[in-house]
Length: 100
Image 1 (cartoon, one colour):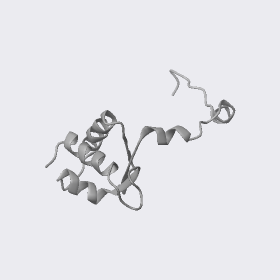
Image 2 (tube, one colour; image 1 turned 60 degrees about the horizontal axis):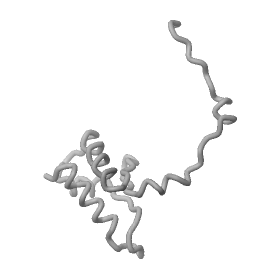
Image 3 (cartoon, one colour; image 1 turned 180 degrees about the vertical axis):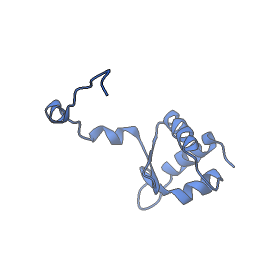
Image 4 (tube, rainbow, N blue to C red; image 1 turned 90 degrees about the horizontal axis):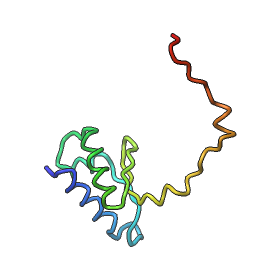
């Protein structure tokens, strides 16, 4: 059974590996394959969070998509559109304290 740090190291090594026509980069890995990397029959959320924390130390992020995980550099998320205040204001619901 690997520690979360060891699992993060393996995932980072896979990130730098050449496969699917790419020299390195973002990839996805099935939950069952992740079980094989961790050496655990069940992957509890705490393990996923610990692996994700170690991956951040290595300059990568772990995205949990239920059936699979994505390992990517944080910069991949930089181009995701930000929601504007105009849009948010359409859905704003004031918080009222002390009322049931």
